[in-house]
Length: 198
Ligand SMILES: O=c1nc[nH]c2c1ncn2[C@H]1C[C@H](O)[C@@H](COP(=O)(O)OP(=O)(O)OP(=O)(O)O)O1
Ligand SMILES: [Mg+2]
Image (cartoon, rainbow, N blue to C red; front, side, top):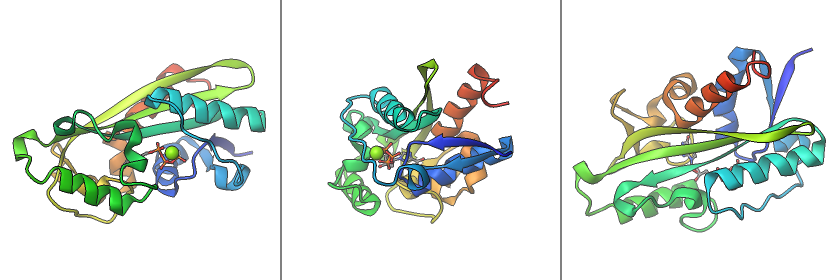
């Protein structure tokens, strides 16, 4: 039987990132589209950790199984860490395109040297017979002046990765996983839960 990991997400781009990280470990990735399409989890927390725990525990309780959740976002230094936890809702209602337009507009007069930012990702794992645990990953970059690249999701087209000299949206899912906030969090989870992710 193939091992599977249930992720409490309704973001298809995020699910693809997780597939690039979990399929090589022999796991099938299952999302809320398959297991709880009707369930809406309101993200009422004020930190990535609170929201990741909320999403993981809500779906784990609903299903009675082990569930992983990811709450993530982009923290821009020149904007005092915004949009942060509110990244998905920055320009209103969960519209990647509108979010990028708003961010670029707010950064219009910011010099190149001040355009530093990082993607942050908290991953929570919850289940019926253990205490919920969390791990945290980041990825440093620079906010570009315009969009470039068509891979990935969210803010990837405007996030420049200096170490690779490319935009995040110009990386394959595998290349992204090797350096991303999500990849870094998953690698920590793997270290701490070798029995879960062998
Ligand atoms: O690797 C990434 N590359 C680009 N953008 C990213 C990334 N990781 C997070 N982001 C942005 C997208 C969204 O604006 C917010 C996540 O919000 P977040 O609530 O965690 O996810 P979501 O609402 O899209 O899906 P769900 O809550 O169902 O998992 O940060
Ligand atoms: Mg969300």
